[in-house]
Amino acid sequence: MESSFAIIAEPNRRSILSLLASSERSVGEIERRLRMPQTSVSKHLRVLREAGFVEARVEARRRVYRLRPEPLMEIDAWLAPFRRFWTAHIDALERHLDRMEQTSKKGRSDEKP
Amino acid sequence: MESSFAIIAEPNRRSILSLLASSERSVGEIERRLRMPQTSVSKHLRVLREAGFVEARVEARRRVYRLRPEPLMEIDAWLAPFRRFWTAHIDALERHLDRMEQTSKKGRSDEKP
DNA sequence: GGTTCATATGACCGTCAAGGCATATGAGAG
DNA sequence: CTCTCATATGCCTTGACGGTCATATGAACC
Image: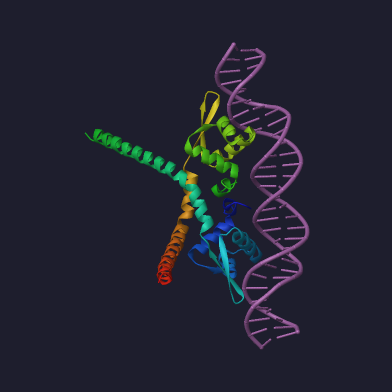
């Protein structure tokens, strides 16, 4: 289960992370909000914790989990080199659409008379 | 193999994507650059292609693969809500470091006389 | 102490995907 | 048409992961 990428490959774990993005939560809250069995939540939290995605604070009998930024930042960093690439694509697309617009304007002015 | 996240969970596939980020490549080039068996490369390329990460162009007997932006953009979009969160963390860290610096300046000025 | 609530752990099972090997396809060269 | 280069596909084995059920830990309250 080494890599951060493998961790977020699991849909339920992504749900948990997304939930924790808004605010920290206890295990029971996660269980109810996501409608998944408690043992499953605990296991996923364990994986997330060991991979550094979350950390737990003990509060009476509850454990409150909150996000830790590092692993997600790592993924974000991996994506960085690709961003160049797709912004270029989008620019090309926009230029293309601009040309389309030019053409359709000409087309319309031809149609009218 | 549904989600884009599962696709990039595989290290070899990430290597292929990173390689294609710099420029398009034939299967043989990928094979040699990454030192992985050809059948393995072909299989990963198939997965990547079916998930929309890459597309192939036929050029004589070669197939030249190039990146497609959409799936990586999707992942980037999923990360977006978390960015708020870690920039906040970094801000807090920076404020913390600023305070440290203040303190150590005082400390140093105490040490001197 | 015992009981209950909140969470964690362990064992078992099914599934699914990756790697390796052999082989198929298919284009081009002779 | 045949041979070869470039790539794809099928089959099989193996290992890992997630789900479920049962059970353990452990704090709080009586």
